[in-house]
Length: 437
Image (tube, rainbow, N blue to C red; front, side, top):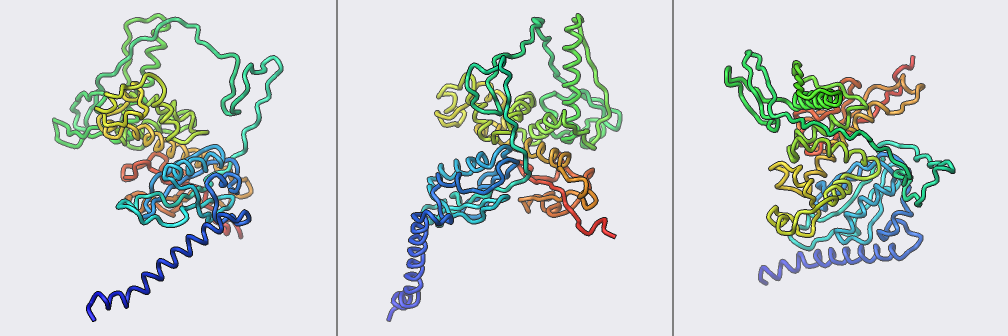
């Protein structure tokens, strides 16, 4: 008896058994799919009516590949149905029309394809599962009550963005002055002064006088750009007051202690940090990211960024081809002008990734400052606990599961966080024995 015959005798029954088990699993899945009383297996279109997630809040949507690696992640602020729609869109693109439902509670939903897809060389890269977690509950938006005299002429499509009959118009016809910042003057600790091009603040450099590292940190770059914004606003105010030849100078000691984050500046600070650290967009794109963050309460970054690229005059098909994009993709001239050289290597993801990072930062700020702990539970509040996804990141791997005081929470991503979207979360942590005598 040759070796091949022996192999068939030994491994043949095992292979047949595995095939039978796979066939049985597929058969059982389809039986459950056809059973109206079995909610463990559902068609994708049946999901919206079956989920039990809390209706309104902040949700974390994580799409996993069959290999277990993260395929995509989103923070959705709005409704559970919007969070579910985010996951379903990915599943539809992957041609998954039915799913197995695992956890289905008020705080978490887990779904996955019916069975592992072994076909193709990219087996592990295929979409496999999705998890939707409730990060923070929210009250449903109050319905808008229109006075009779303000009844809208058109039907209201969404209570979040009603159609209004009137809008405020700035009647001032005075043109704004042209304000530009070409250079930023920096003084080294050794006393040497040198000018940095305003569009190269993040570039690594050494002091020509003493040879020490003179690279600005992300926190310092944010301070420089914040000062530039304040200078521009002052220049415009003075121009409108009648001045013509205007020089505005801001002097300050740069520190790495960061800036004071407030509800008024958190969007700008988050956008500044994301644009600076990722470097996919030019610094001039910060106002665009801030504007896109206004829609973050009802849409997820991919939809927001796509709508932004879709608006306005589009690049020609030839221009898109030269830029390495699909000819049917959306890319306005304004959005393309936002891109840095690094961003042009991934033009369709640059705005989305930058926006997602900024929104994670803003979410941490709001979690810290409006965690809504009832007064009678404050005595049990021990601090805030980190929840991270990436163990390979030096920062995330170190802080995962640790509890820190409010003043020590890293709202802006620290320099040793290597995650592209800085997707770590924080939440209040209670010690139920604390305060009990």
